Figure (cartoon, rainbow, N blue to C red):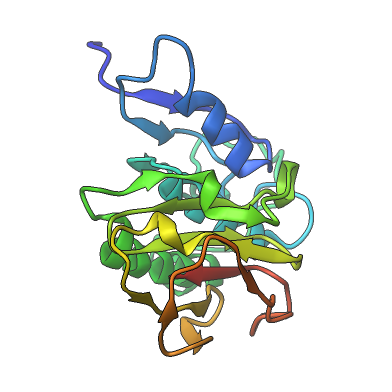
Length: 213
C-alpha cells in the first residue's frame, strides 16, 4: 500500500501521551495521524470507568490533531475467540449504547470547533493541570476557540491569549457524558493564566469535563 497516514496502534490508556508520541514521530510528521486500534467497547484492556476511558480516547485523538479513529465494539469483532467479556449485542443495538451516545456528543464538538482549518494541538493552552499518564489533559486551539479535555479533577489555569486577537472570551464547561454546557463567565478579557475551578463529578458521576473557550 502507498503510505498515506501514520497510525497509533496501542491498547494503552495513556491516550494523550500515546497519540503525541506518534504525532511527533521521527519521519512521520508530514503524514496525518489516526488511531488505528484503540481498545473497543467491552474490551478488558481499559481499567477504571470504561465510558470515561472511551471518551478520553476520542477527545484526545482529535483535540491533539488526529484525523480518524477506529471506533468499535468487541462483541461485533468476528474473529474473537472468547478472550474478552462479550456483550449480547447486535449491530442494531450499537447506536443506543452509552459509549456511542457519548461519541455522538464528541462529534458535535469536533464539527463546531476542531474542524476549523486553523486547529492545532497546543499543550501550552493549559498552564496548570496538564497532568501525565492516563490523567494527562488534551489541549488545542484555533484562531477562534480553545479546548482542553480533563480526564479527572485537578487545579487548573489556562492561557486564553492563545486565541488570536485581543477581544473578550467566553469560558464554558461541557459535560461529555450528558451533552450540556455550564457557563463560567459570559464574557471576560483574555488572560495568560486564568484560574478555572473544576466542576466536580459530571452527570455520570465521574470527573471528566471539557473546557471550551
